[in-house]
Amino acid sequence: MPHPVSPFRDEARDVATGHPIAILPGIWEIRESLAPAFDTPETWVSLFLLTDPTGHASPVMIDTGVPRSTHTVILPALEALGFAPSDLKVAVNTHSHHDHAGSNVQLREATGCQIWIGRLDGPALLRGDRFGPDEIPPH
Image 1 (cartoon, helix red, strand yellow):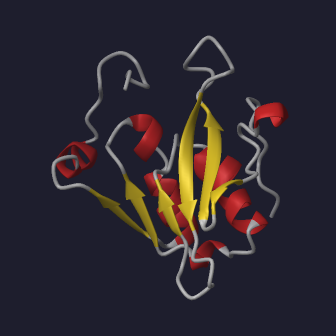
Image 2 (image 1 turned 180 degrees about the vertical axis):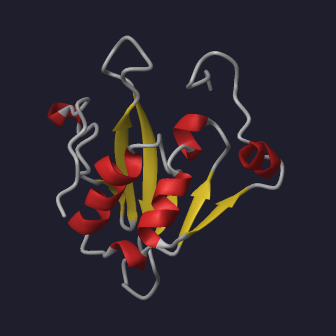
């Protein structure tokens, strides 16, 4: 099934393309647009995919992005690197903000992966806490 294309795609910066950007061996950046929450399309959240360069361990996702991220950038990035969705076993949220943990449910449904988060952020995530009127709070 083809992945949906984000209307906020920016090929020049690899934002919302699903193209993983090599940072170091086994560390890949995946950029998801934060438009339309911000007035400028030059804003994105960086998600990271950790892969074992030796091929012995399953990939690990660091942060899940906004709700659309599973289908617009994460699954395409996994596919681009030769992984099936079911190869992803764990996604780790760095914190519970919407732009870092917003696609947890979608990613779990698409891959079956576990979602991990720190003990102090877990309760807020379970309650579905909001961070005021902004969907994406300042960091």
